[in-house]
Image 1 (spheres, helix red, strand yellow):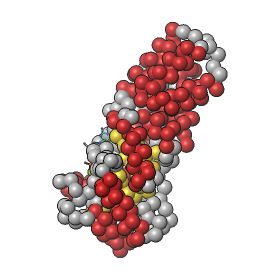
Image 2 (cartoon, helix red, strand yellow; image 1 turned 135 degrees about the horizontal axis):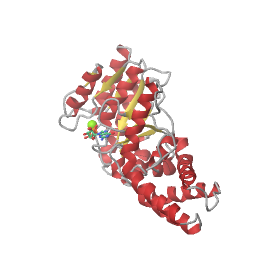
Image 3 (cartoon, protein in one colour; image 1 turned 180 degrees about the vertical axis):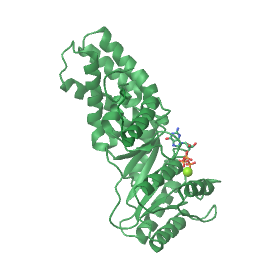
Image 4 (spheres, helix red, strand yellow; image 1 turned 45 degrees about the horizontal axis):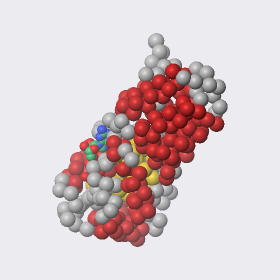
Length: 324
Ligand SMILES: Nc1nc2c(ncn2[C@@H]2O[C@H](COP(=O)(O)OP(=O)(O)OP(=O)(O)O)[C@@H](O)[C@H]2O)c(=O)[nH]1
Ligand SMILES: [Mg+2]
């Protein structure tokens, strides 16, 4: 922030959110940025250096395919071997952003009401918390969300969603623990229509992707929702925990096939040394990344922006004049 400049509140807000992402990713970028800087500082940008760069990217959780792609993108920019290292680091961020940009897609609501959003994922990735945050954002944008407590499995799951409902002052549709999750989804659809809610967000229990009977349950929930409103659910959001690194790829693969995932939310990027997995996900699946989680509070959900994310990952600050 410069001198006496008065900044618009929105800009300050954006910066603090970016700051949270940047400081969260700093553990990834410490590794990546330092390694890369070492390569760039001590040598010319020749083939050997690029090979080492690729190794650094792989170690930063980008995986082999995305790392090769980043290096190919970088090579295509044809930096002279003695280019200044700041410029080279910017070029690296751009090479990563080239992969991420197609996935930069904010969540859109449908014309048909209610827009139905189904949250899925393995245990503990942040589904329920993301619902709370998403709800806040929808309210701020003037929408009228309603929540469905479709996790009828885990003790206290209904209570947990109810707390988010109370914090946001929005209704939560629930049945008793152990009830049929699809029935809760159906109730939620009915309530949404009856009380003119334009968005219904339905929670589900965490499940491992190799438990076929639990994956079948998701299919049933989707069918029931589709019966209540043709074409619904509009979004099946797979919530992935960035700290699980490459395992997130296996989850995306399995849920993508069976649960009809339409987009991703990647959480816990505030504390992760493994932010590079986002690049691997983008390269492998190309699914929209609708939002990222950068903390546990209501306001800690951001739209995913490719270039700022890539710059934070390589340790560049937002305004580009310095890096760590
Ligand atoms: N630091 C951080 N913590 C998060 C984030 N998102 C969720 N959490 C935390 O992760 C933990 C699990 O979150 P939940 O929302 O309960 O996860 P869930 O996927 O609903 O879990 P199950 O319902 O048990 O499958 C909680 O302690 C959250 O506060 C995030 O973006 N950053
Ligand atoms: Mg949950």
